[in-house]
Length: 548
Figure (cartoon, rainbow, N blue to C red):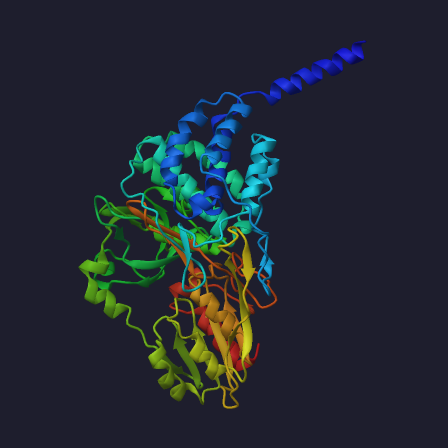
């Protein structure tokens, strides 16, 4: 008898728990997924026939008042039914020759989420099977086979109110859910990021709080392309008049960008900064984790430096380490791109190519343009090696240079592109090729220099040059973000973006987050910088001369 009573009590408890009131976060999380799913799948929504943002504003108060899972699910069912009957179509056949990449694709939540009734799950599954096949209203294919976001306009929304903040979160989260090729490589599952970030958007007390929440969400992409730029609303952004690098939890000055400003403040290459406004560099590295993007640690630290040494104030207090002693001084920040424009341009006007000692060619890929390639080939063709310095951002020169370096055409990359007829799914493209049949190709050693400053086109170019007959990559881990970007500029006062196509080696191994792995790893040291050395270039010359 006691056994049966115990079983009965367990059943009662399970029933009560099953009927318990869902939390606000639970309701909003699944509403976000359904809203985004219908946005790209339902014929009435994906075609642009209904004002989908307004629909969300109308349904949110009803969902907020839902007291049980059953009531919540019923509201969603009625919402979908109100969109009209979906015609049952013949099964959508996969295009011939299409090979899907499905590490990103997962609609299992439709049947697994406990907040959804079986009837609602069935409706959602029916929509997938009879999904919209016309021109998408909110996204379109772009020239590089990524997407272009269209028909979104959030510039007039008041983000001091909760619902517009929720709408912006839903929009951004679903763009990433369906159109970010590297979603599967994030440190944290995107579903978890949604539930984790919802409270920040709900509880934001001001527009500034809203933008900080959006910035924190973008960082969770673990994508060096996911920049987050706030447009100045008060003062202009000011900068430290030098380039710097983090080494051993210290910031080292590596290059002066405006001589007169650096001289006025007593700043020299090799200076070691140990504190910024009384915070150690280690503390700054830790504090900025939630606000600074980066596919890997090297890219993150590179971005930390840029953030830490810029701001809207007029000056900054720095602690320097020199000859074993610490000194603190307050120096000015400058908008030197404007106030010292001529000096800045002159300082950064570098040679495109030259011949170093021992008949070694050198090419600055950051300044070389396509029109300069014939002259570069003529001058460097008889050298015993060419060093292509790609610790910068190239200018679309890889294709023409590859014809000079390669003896034949070779595959160097393959990428994935979004299938707009089946949002969330990606498909493999044909392999990308570079070079051409050329018996008169360059016969010397090809050296590529890389660092954390090498991102996107630099990484793509390095993959191409790697196919040349005698290439060695020297340096350190790159930024780990390749492929064209999708931009978001329709929310007032900021710009952000994310990688839009997935880039892989021809064997389909990954480059995102990993970057391009050097054959010979070497990084600058504090001592080397202070001695005025370029240790990466020096190592390349050593390899050229010794073969090891």
